Length: 182
Image (tube, rainbow, N blue to C red; front, side):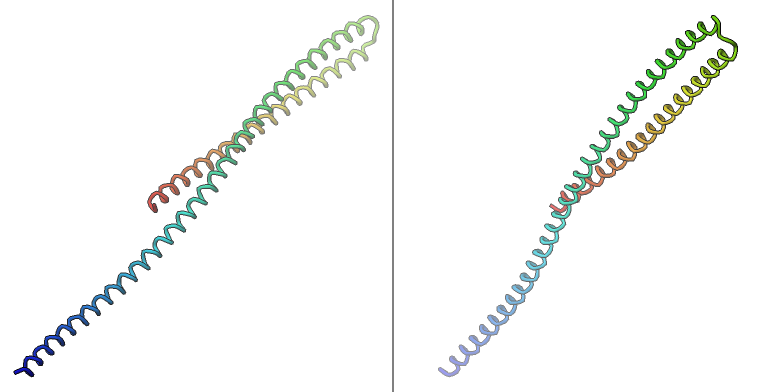
């Protein structure tokens, strides 16, 4: 009977041992799955950090480009203002030259009428018309140059504004992406 009791105890201990080994195996499997999950989460965290770092670098680059575009826009605007001022100065100079030419023509006309022959008055008249044509051509050239420069500056300004809008859009997208990553 003692042997039966001992056999029974041994069987009980064997079943407990088998249960414990099963539990130990289940715990090892669970630990393995947890380790894999932790490694996967660490990898995802690393990727998120790299993406956030890259996004912040792109954001800084876009902000630097935005500052450069704003400076270029300001330069273009100041160039346009300078050209307008230059055009006004040249218009005044043309007006002054026209007045001086008229005064000189009138003085030459007075002195020509008092004893000069017809050839001299024709030469003065020819010179007057030639000067007038030159002044008109100068006016037109200045006007054309000014219009061309204004068109070029306006085109550059539009291009810069478009690049600025595009950059701002990209920065907003990067900020949204960065916010999602966080």
